[in-house]
Image (cartoon, rainbow, N blue to C red; front, side, top):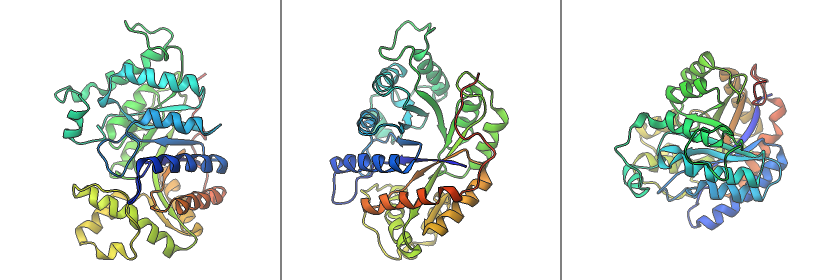
Length: 341
């Protein structure tokens, strides 16, 4: 049976603030932990008025400290924004505080625009192909046999679970080469989904981290007690995405009835494309859509994101997903990432 996890974008809803977002994130994490979800990830974004997870490692510590068993991690850390040593120290600290529970997903996108990238004080003329070397350097800081001239303290000798994130073939190739689990951002960039999965699985090389390929896919779910209610609730994220794609990012707005009917054909086509890996509806509708997606992709794990304006409705959506877990078709892949022997 496909494993289910949670990606929380720590949304700041219209009329609210980051402090409320953080309280809601902890509430959600405790809720889904009790429901049996495997992991809870937060993503690094900068300069986004509707996303509160910019200081990702700080927020991971907050969530890990308020939960007890679920894996907590980054989906992901955008490594071009940081030196590998800084991330090694941060996640060495997290792994020291919460041993055996920390995931470190790594992406090469900046999670921002060029103006924000300059404010992050990174060199914009750096080699865009440096990401693989930065990943190797970061992993080396955790090695007991590290040959680097600087020691990560804490970090050396610790073992957060490393993941490679991506939305193209580049991440798939790197994850396969390094023998790491791979997470594809199909919840907002599904265009190369099947090619990336095939590339990763066909080229995977077993490593000390992972014996067999392991694929986790991003998936949007807007579940409610009726299809109509679910479509209404989904309109908040649809509005937010349209605003983002037109260069005007906003806080997550209240839902609007019939929102997609008001869109231009081009905007509707954009939504249909970028949010194609999405289930909207009641338990039966969502179960059917998820079964089809799993059958098509043979995903080992789905990491589900649900961006709703109303926090209680979001909690209810994950309850519905948990209630249909046993109805989802099994996959042919391994159920959990297992280290090589």
